[in-house]
Length: 421
Image (cartoon, rainbow, N blue to C red; front, side, top):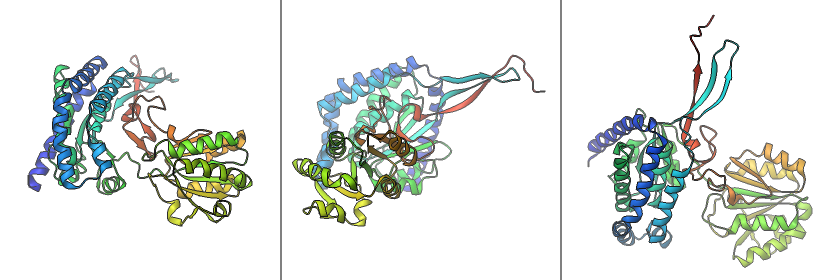
């Protein structure tokens, strides 16, 4: 397609999504659940076909020189096809937020005022590499009553189209428009730019991928974006921390998984306990082959530690590397966090209730924790069932974005012939 044809194609996709969104918004929960369960069954039944199409993407990826980690994320196996299907079934089992009415109250005039939860409308999702996002995102949007336009990475085009076929069949069997979920079929990068300009058809954009993708989407979009750029997460060990808890939380926050946005990247330690706890932490991290980069005070205690630079406090490593700073007290820790944090997830380890309450109040992040690993910042762990991503914005959603985060509220007013005097 040339640019003019891509623009026309994307506008058509947008119009179809807007039309389908009105049908989907009115659909009963049972109808949406039927579509989801059929889709889950089809993914498993067509597993061999999905792997055949995925093999084309893997072959192309090898030819393009994609590294082993990217190829691993791109691969569809029997295990992750089963995981995709199970994830969709779990979403089907969740309570439907659409139509829920809350906060009903009588006013002095005699009318009743409440709030009804409604879909956002049309959601555009731009993502990279992982074909499972196609199924996960489609399922979350479908359950929350939103039509969606999915633009996956060119490296997964065959896999995404194959998954889309299962989604389309599931929608048809539930008598829902196929346009409720559309996968952009061109790999031309101009399609992304056109999607970001469809402000008359699309209500919100959600990017999922690396920092470069999210920065580009945020800069170019004419449509509101739900996003987070970095996961520069902190754990602060207060001088009144329980040492055993502190070591456990600090170790798990860093080493449970390295490549996730809720992995700790900077450890802050209160000066009065630094000499006691840092050698024990260093030994624990050494057993996981984590490279430590420390401030001058840290290196006085751990001479083998690499010298940290200003850049280290601003870096999301996504690797077995940890920056460590010794701070005077909680005041200094909060200043450091609010200066360098990406407002994703930050945790304090302390037995002081007053300090814990203050930390919760003064640290400006989407998730703030007490005596818990940052790795808990996840939609499933929060009881949301599933998430479309994590938002560090303050509008419209913040933190893990589940079904409720994909809806909005409108006021509903009940009267019985009431008129305003």
